[in-house]
Length: 389
Image 1 (cartoon, rainbow, N blue to C red):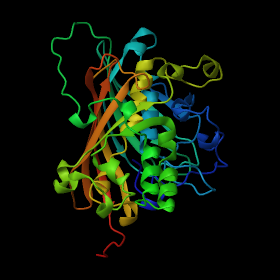
Image 2: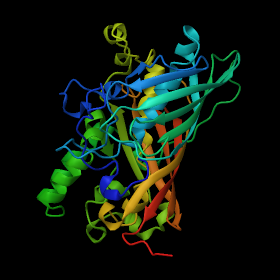
Image 3: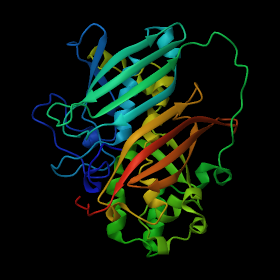
Image 4: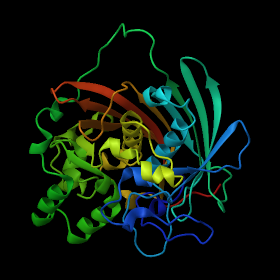
């Protein structure tokens, strides 16, 4: 989710003030209801690079998952950094139809250091491969004044317009618990209010939850499926002994969370000609916009191992993502018009590390589903006291 830092300062903490060294606004979190996901990952070109490089800078500072409060800066949400990097890669593809129809199929990356929310993100893209069928890009991200030379790196692979018909098509169905209409499932905050009214959650815990995930729920509509882990324990807010999930009888690696989600902002609004005239780079196609939205939202994995085992962020001294592998299995995605089903779980934990994975299906208007993306991550989990060697 974020680069290495303590749990209290990771991507679930408060957001930041602006940096005096930056010409960007601080964070768009408080800019009003008109602000949406594509504002948070908008870029502009930095023309000072070498001829074989493309240099970009974020228009606004990277955002955390939490509500901005006070002046304390914090670590950015890793999904925001991933989406910015993917956005930058798209702008180095051949212009015209090739860019609009290009399909991202792989993104492999590492969180190398803290990404702060009080300064813009600089992204350098190197063109590793350009053929008639494939484009590969290496993205390196940094921030002025940061102790680490780089805070993030990733390689992204694109398949250009296919020249033949698909010869093989199949996709596994989503978990059975997701069957039915997402509109019949109460949203996150409604479930939280019910738990608070029932005395399962304190008012203080309710407010902390709302602050902790404020921005992510502002960008995406989320409805968790009853009977799965995070629905029953509200992402660790409800103590394990108070959770009613039948999954507690399962071993940790079989526990799962399943949820419906979709982007509040229509993907076609990622293209903004007025902002482009002002030098702001926006995404040129709904396909690219939906890929960036899915990349943003799948990065919630590192905490799952805690939540699925009756622990919360206060139970660890540090937790953060170390690396990720994101793969797209479909080209025509619409993260706004179509509901997405996301399932995730933790496969293994030990030796200060954990491995988690997520699957994302798209439900089309006719009710059919297709597995469109998967993400795996390795995360760091450290206790509150570190033994001295």
